[in-house]
Image (cartoon, rainbow, N blue to C red; front, side, top):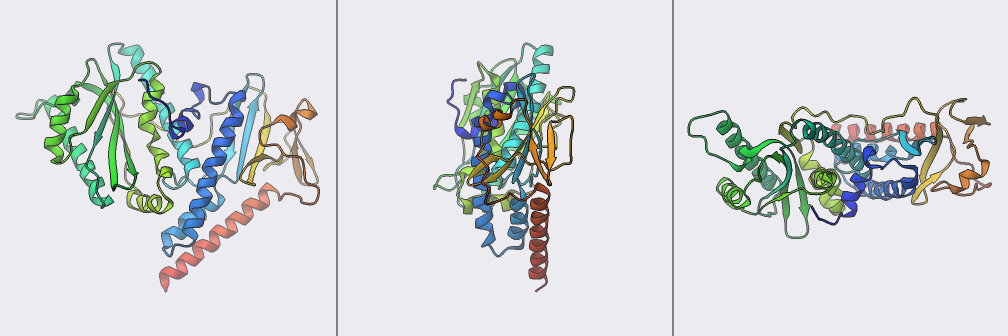
Length: 380
């Protein structure tokens, strides 16, 4: 599928480990993407601080401590760098950093399942199917319309395959498995909810027939796209899993409105051969336990993640970390190597950075204070 990747799509694909995202040579670009995502999170934090809702206060409390520090481990014998520890708010609808990590985890899990299916069913090919509904000003109504229409389409497939008498044929009956997500945009012409689906089939579903069926179901929408995924399948799968980061394309006001309306709703679904795929809850990378490593610690300040050399833990003889006056510094094999690390800045003698533990403590105190204010507002 020849399609140019957008920065949003690339940010997810570039975070999936087995596509080479964890290569040490790509670490600088990865850190820059995280910095851009965190900057948007901070913009949302400032936006919510002026909102009167209790929910806004709670969301802002989570954003205030999310992604302030990132702890990576470089497995220098194999040229890999993996995210070992960080604080995440897991509010992916308003936090692009959490959204990137969540989308990458889902993409990796379903790509792994696809590799297994390929070995067992080489006759199946992946197809990218897009289903849309007409734009509208009422987000709740449009989203409910898309959800109901998809449910009817899935019922048609299930009933026909089960041999239910009178059940209509649908082109989705050709699909022996699928994973699909609900996505949302608003480019000034109203809310535009739509669905991206990866369907596995031995023969290509008819776009014309599916469009006619979709129009009968929705009553107002017939725009459907069906195309085979050729070349690197990860790019086609990425079109589905980019839903997690698309919210950051909205204005801050629209982003917050959409997050409130869609919170708790299921935006990722599957059936058939893709059913049962487990997406890891942790947003961290899998460690390479048997390999030696160097620890890298980064703090967000000055609009980017910068190498600090501070450690949130005690002395670790195996990791190459030494302790000096409650300050932890990474000791690479080459003492001059730190200057080549992405985000490294020369130390500033006049100011001494706060320790990781102290910053976490401050963040927790701010979070508790925000929750207490929210409880007081709700009682008054």
